Amino acid sequence: EMTPIQARDGKFYTTLPNDMFNLIKIQISVAKSLPDEFLMEVLVACLEALHEMQADNVSWLDLNWKEIAKKENGTEVLCAIVNDNLRLQEKSDDFMNDMIQNLTTEEKANLNDKIEEVSGGYVEVALHASTIISASIIQLLEDENITTKLFTPEWLDGRFESMKSIIETHADFFSDLEIWLPEFFFVKLTKSSLECIEKSYI
Image: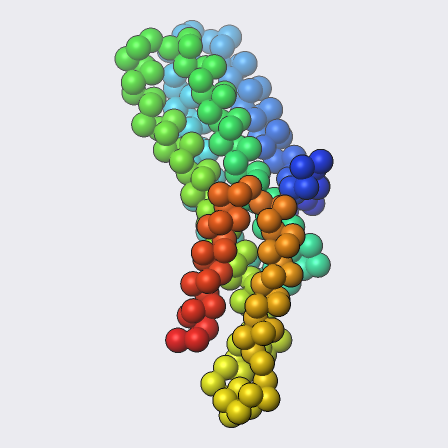
């Protein structure tokens, strides 16, 4: 797990996208020294490995998000995962667009589905991470026994203003998340948060 760094745009990132594609470029440079048919094989292998890594990242998030969220910088780490995956998508698209220039029309057609699968996969991981951020906010409220007091006698007679606490907590998080996430993913997160709040009432 890498330490997120806040960039000038206010968003958190890690060095993972740069590190990963530097390694891939080294592998491709080796492949270019081999006969032409090996380049296609290496590109396919890279795309398959990237797709597998995306699935592994989703599984890792599902297993570890509660522990991540408990950390002092947990929300920053989760935001960095969203932003890193968008950078990975950009780097993957740019890299593949550059590499397929050396392929035949038939080879490009054969790779197209895999390229789109990997590109879309990064967006899916980012979306998954954004929904986990919304779930982590609800988890915090549960840990503080705010949502668990819904429909209790003290909630019913007005002694415990749970909805006020829920709204204030989300407002506090959203003031940062609006800066830390791209607009599209912030909107998705707010929708997911509303769904989580609704589930707390059901």
